[in-house]
Length: 247
Length: 256
Image 1 (tube, helix red, strand yellow):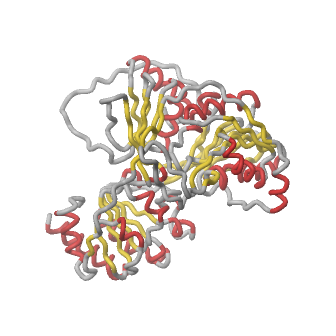
Image 2 (cartoon, chains in turn purple, green):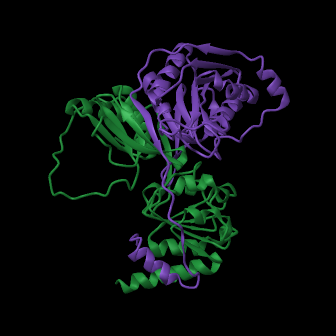
Image 3 (cartoon, helix red, strand yellow):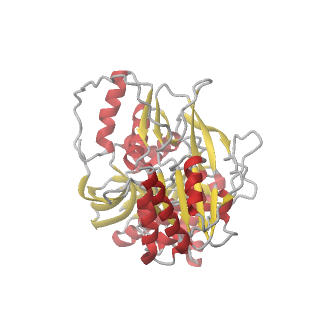
């Protein structure tokens, strides 16, 4: 089984988000960057489990500069077979999707996995784009995947207020949400082995950026909280009605 | 077309876009809407933004805003393609009735067969799904166990609200995963968010801080959530919640 896992680099979930003076880019000072948790904990680990069960390979794919090699090496330490980095500074989802689709077209993977969204831009767009560019089915927000045989998949997919169970044949694209797998911590052997695993750098294909996050703002802080006496909840109801006008 | 498969739907929508020479396509920010968004953008070579939470600006170029970094910030996207595809977050715009008639035109489009078979769908019936809910009542570890959820559900019922929970509660299996709101769960923006027994970790705040009004009930006056709240009640939720439920019921009765 040949599996491709697409991974992104994102700020850590606890990072304090700030921007440069012009508000055009993230102020990376003091920000720790990690592999997007949905890519790592769920998509990558499930891919490795499938490879352990059925054999084959798990290839990591990242679109980014050499600064991303740290997270790629971590993915290799967790257990991926090899990695490809498309050398570019991506500005938009469609740009990234076109790079992924180009690589996938040439290699012919049975499964293409990624996290349900990145925790920085929260787009959840790239998976659907890759699937469309390759004319493959796409299962988004998958929380469980079982494969009775290497060609057949049964997937549980999160939908609003519930879940649906789907069946389909490989090849397909899947984005993983919580529940798909349990996080794996790389062990010393994995870390040592990762240093010698192949990391191929590929040149990007030309693609346009049609939607670019050009400006950022931080939410204006709330004016200070109004405290209500816990004995007088009718006062809270009155304020919610008369002042906040939400009930 | 039932069940919905974005791979099939994209063919129909793309044809409709071409037939109408549409310049902007707006989808809902649902699981299916988001899957369709990416497909359409790739098929039409269109710029796309998912989760737009304000009316796009067109004064200088086409700009669409959305929350990013799990709600910690807002990004303004510039779209430069002839066709733009957007998905719109719930509660972004209030509907206005103009009385105008929108003509419905039938298009005949040959669709491919779906390659996905739907085996079953399990959905909680009778409540408004969280992303669309206008009022949300949410519980955290302060409720001390799943057996205490009754007092929260009573308040939700009195308010016509949907219930939600924090990550530790979903992780502990007290409540189903689809109720988990926050950075790694669902991001919501109801008109009113009432949080009981949730301390307000940065990851939780990220998923709820776009709510219009936030009420925090916590016995710990130092809980970080109070800093993000509009109204705070420092007290024992086991006493405060039933009192609030009674006050809501009384208010609703008086209004007839």
